[in-house]
Length: 344
Image (cartoon, rainbow, N blue to C red; front, side):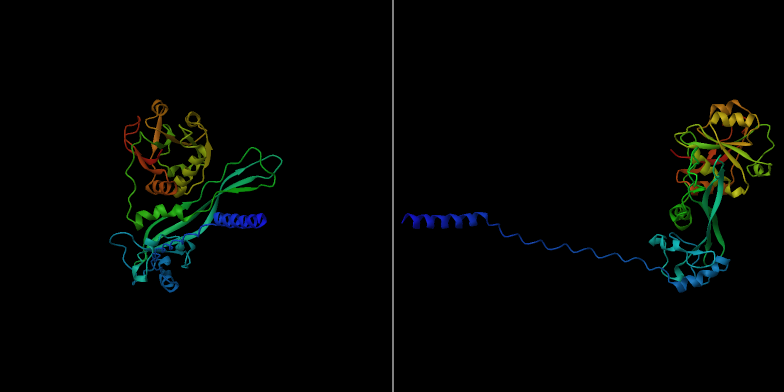
């Protein structure tokens, strides 16, 4: 009897145990939220349309294209100098893209990427190291007339400086290639009718002063190229704001339109003025807040940059814009000096 009762009790305990350990039935999964319908991208022109626009690269207009008038965006395509589609055509923002030939106002003509020798670093016991920087000529033409709207040179970044000790096998260093991102800012003024930012207050930024000694015969920046060997001292009064290596890159943009070779020498601001005085350099490019007292104390003249040089420098560097050193900021400076400034 006790065995039977015990057996029944054990069975009952096991049933209750299984009941207690049973997992509750899972709740039904919520219905999935339907994904929003994708926004269709505006159609881009086809290969046949690009072929019809090829003559624009040679200065010939396409009658069916749209005139470069009205409000933005002024839609464009990108071709290489031979009239074929350039890879950057895929990077043009969608709202800048035309949907047909009748929608095309501008043709961006992109030249081949070139490399320029910036510096040759000489070493004892090993090969020289050459520093190269990439650049690319670009031209913007009206599709309907074939006429040039604007042109410029876009530069890649400066190569890193040479170190005192390098690997023996190293013979070259180069900056990064030119990218569409660098070009896009220049294009905005023509595609979106964006004007340059108004000339900033020279007291709140570092403004470039192109300085020659008072006794120098040089009257313009272009005249520096007529010297037997042009040496330019590059400097900044605030190294943390404008590193000397960055300054060298900006000056390379500034002097590009003038087309002459020069030797950049990186130095401290005080050394740059001393080099002018003793004839060790022909010109000093000084980034400073103006008026800067050492320039007040000496006998110097200030050279204005050409409009092309100012535009090229501001296009190639995000924090650089055209600027002015107002007349009479310094003695022997009766007129405004047209230059560029670097934002903080």
